[in-house]
Length: 121
Length: 111
Image (cartoon, rainbow over all chains, first blue to last red):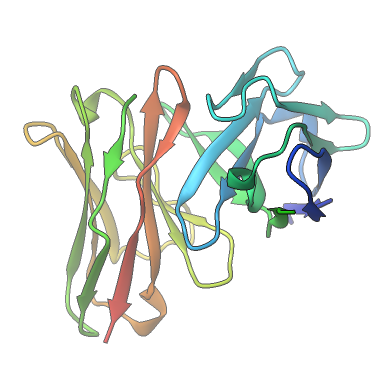
């Protein structure tokens, strides 16, 4: 059974840092690209970052470029998101999501339950 | 930047059919595939449609997706509505800059 379990969410002051983790199990982690997607309270989904299976390709949303860093440890089957210079608008539930290939394209097939990051003084 | 616009909310009675639209801001929505995700209250999203009209295993055939390239929109149709279908639904496609783009979400009420 595929499982994605996020952790590391907390209350942090503006300008602070936080590192999120996503522990994966039930599949060959290194074979899959992974993503972080966030959801501000009462708002919609926003894609944050992508990393390929061997970390050769990494992308960020404009809103987090230069402040967030995605990484993974395939030996530990874990995904990370280092968040620096946090702002109020980064307050959200952060989900890790597995990307899978369909017939012609890609989509997110499994999501974790999310971890809440609150940025407030 | 490319944006996807959805109605804020829709409502329909059990047993009826409802359609949720997703309109692209520019170009043709048909140039990239569209996915639909269901998010029940307090839960993570799950995929109900991928590649415009494909259902993952386990998703009932009451869920269907389509593209109208002339109107630059995608649609999710749910027939035979059940109370368990009450959720937020998000469309998702692609953008050259922010890669994965989500619509703002549509709250479906089954009453």
